[in-house]
Image 1 (cartoon, rainbow, N blue to C red):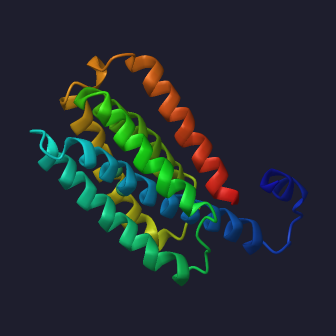
Image 2 (image 1 turned 135 degrees about the horizontal axis):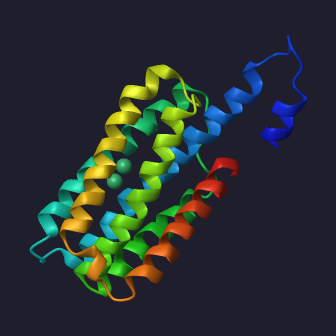
Length: 186
Ligand SMILES: [Fe+2]
Ligand SMILES: [Fe+2]
């Protein structure tokens, strides 16, 4: 739809509308994604709270909460409504975190690696594509860097040795990309 808008635009046309829409979609996805991430780590901790890796998961969870708090403030400031599917992200995030953790620490870390790789990719598109207000770039860059640290933490905890790693990873990444597409509209 936005591609059609771009194609039909003529010189001198009002340009704010498509970019405002693109920004709203991106910020809605950011907010829903951070909400989902914080629920994933809550789900992991419900299962792994006594595991030696719990402090590192708590550290990542605390960073996701800070990311979410930032988007909780940014959405109303930019006039963006949250995803109507927040109750779904609430349940799906927790179930993904707890479900993979139930398969073991390596599977939980495989989930982290898959999710964080997609979130990093999403933030990079926003930084490179000139989609959001440049005033937000430092915040998004900082969050992107922290998601990359989470990705590295997952790999350091032998994520790639999880059972069915390739299939599990592909499935979770596809799910995250679908969630991004859905949250950008709904
Ligand atoms: Fe995050
Ligand atoms: Fe993260």
